[in-house]
Amino acid sequence: MDAGLKRELEAKVYAGERLTREDGIALYESDDLAWLGRLAHHRRTELNGDRVMFNLSRHLHLTNVCSASCAYCSFQRKPGETDAYAMPVDEAVRTARAMAGEQLTELQVVNGLHPTLPWRYYPEVLRELTAALPDVKLRCFTATEIQWFEKISGLPAAEVLDELMAAGLESLTGGGAEIFDEEVRRQIVDHDCHWPDWSRIHRLAHEKGMKTPATMLYGHIEEPRHRVDHVLRLRELQEETGGFAVFVPLRYQHDDVGAPDGKIRNKLQSRTTMAAPAESLKTFAVSRLLFDNVPHVQCSTGTHGLSVAQLALNFGADDLDGSMAAYKITHDAGAHPMHRDDLLDLIWDAGFQPVERTTRYEVIREYDGAPSLAERRSEPQQVWA
Image (tube, rainbow, N blue to C red):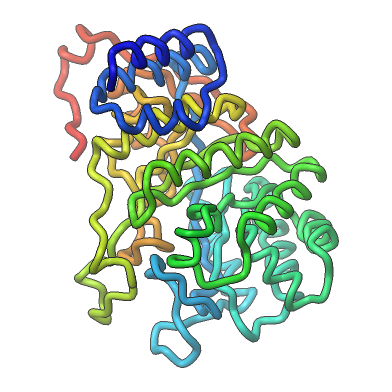
């Protein structure tokens, strides 16, 4: 990067000026990762100090049967495949109860677009989950699923959301965003929910009082300019609604070659390489700097790994998701969820203060800050792989 442009961008960040599309592209072109991290950490510290938020969340997938065949997806199955499933309501409740002993505060529900499950199944599941786990908040369904519910119910999204909220829905999941640019999207997405519908549904959710996440799936066939465009669309919608609580960059992943059936379902795998750690850290930094009106940026330990997750806390992220160590929609290799003590140790080990939160980012408990270096050296420390 030209030294003059570098000074100009740094001055804008420290003056609190809004960055432009051109600024975002220029930041991605910089090869000075430490400089990018310093700028993003400055912004993150201005907003959130040394606090790192987390909650104890788990995933529940009601069905993996899907009418779509998105190119990046390793999760979807077609009717008749041996491992295709759709949970009866009582099985969904039993599965959720089995996880509840971990003192969960949140349950995330994401599914395939099942071609024959009736619309009434979904609010019924939420009502039963709410009755069985009254202290667990339900963060369920992507905008893509809400649009699917419109199709199978004949109801408008506003009424779909009203019924789901009456059944216990606390927030949407923020998924289905992938990359909004149409040039990229038509190569990776095989359903009808694109930016106009995705934004319409989140706008409705925000009007109804929800605080929702927004996601971005990066590191496949998109270019940095597409990531910048994605964030700026969300930034503009946030100016209108103020309803996004957190932005979540999700690292695209290849299939596990050791999957039980031996199949590679990821259609992009043969022509893509996954983002390297440096690219992930750059993505967090630029996202934090561009998306100046969203309070939090989350790093998933599942899509990034523990070491990159810790480093991301110095590159703009201030929230950790430890719900599983393999994000099943993009990487169907099984789940290895982190527990509360794991997340506390991970945050302390990175030198930050853990803050447990609700789905709406209300504080449940503030923990002590990280121990001093002298205290840490006084006893053996866990090494994160």
